[in-house]
Length: 226
Image (tube, rainbow, N blue to C red; front, side):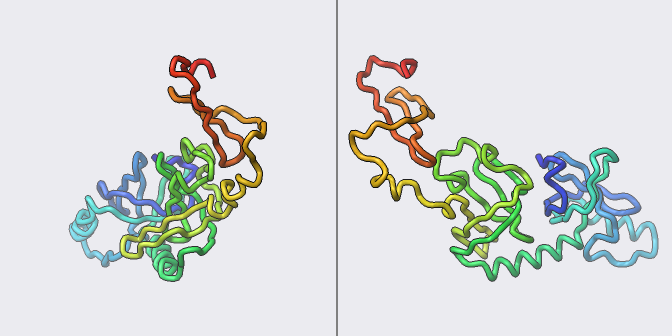
């Protein structure tokens, strides 16, 4: 579901469910919206109510890429534009052609799932996979990212044919494992925080992005002893 506060100026996909005299009725996930006829693409001038109904009715069932232009929880108004989304899509196509692997850019988080966060780069979305958010283990992207947050990301891969861009936040920061051998030595006593307990031992965080394993010494010891 799209939280209302995350939709301002966003690009979304919606399904046409019906129409009225003024335009199209849209379903965006669990929200009902409206596209005025003046914000539709490919609409010709009608000369009768029957012709209007034919043109608008022919769009029912289509999935449209739309830009949110007005959103009011209090007035229950959710207005979208197909025309303005087309302009954003052109910007996205240009960005897709100019971006290169290794580029660093900024974007806004517009959707969060269990497997990652989608970032609007300016007309096209890129995905930060959960494994690319931080060097440490991330249980859920929402633990470190929020909707509407501006983030700096590195471009990891680009598939122009499928319009897929893979992004990373963690690659803009030093890999903590690269210097671990210089900072820690065998026999050194350090503090740590237990982050996970299993039947074979406990994982301990000793620094950002660094976890170690305390292996269970005896099989008869169980995880409740940690």
